[in-house]
Length: 221
Image (cartoon, rainbow, N blue to C red; front, side, top):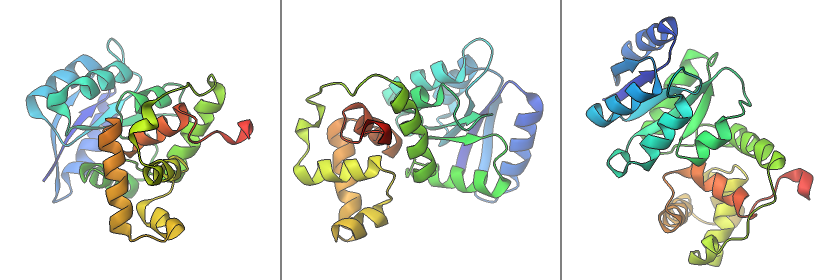
């Protein structure tokens, strides 16, 4: 059973999500809260598999709540999915950087929401590689030049190559095809890179790829 926590300041939004999720045999809503502070408290108490987190809430917003959840080692298995009204909300990139596993726009089709919850609960994390890649590229293109970092020194050449492909939005199967590897081998390389870099999931791996200059937004050439 996938356990979900809902965090949104609009009661009608929570009710709609709760009704949709609880109708599924493999998903149950274990809590719903109107602000980020309560989201963190309930996440610590219930340790849900997935938190659907509105990014804009009064008081402690979804960004700060995501940061606190991402920084708590006891919540390492709690995956945050950011809910936003706009495809390119200015805070979404920062939310991914501090630990969110992906994002959804609030007018997402019900079947896509259910699929996203299941994907994230499995630990795959990056909801839509292509869309999330475009989102990260958009914000990376507005930010400063990639910072010089020895962060990638812990990776083998093959792992660096694979992290770059993750940053470009490729799935494990696509990476395997590109590099003529088995999907299982590609997945192993991705997992090892995540462990070495200390990131929670593929979304943060994408962010690292951009921040270190391993992948560069198209406008930079």
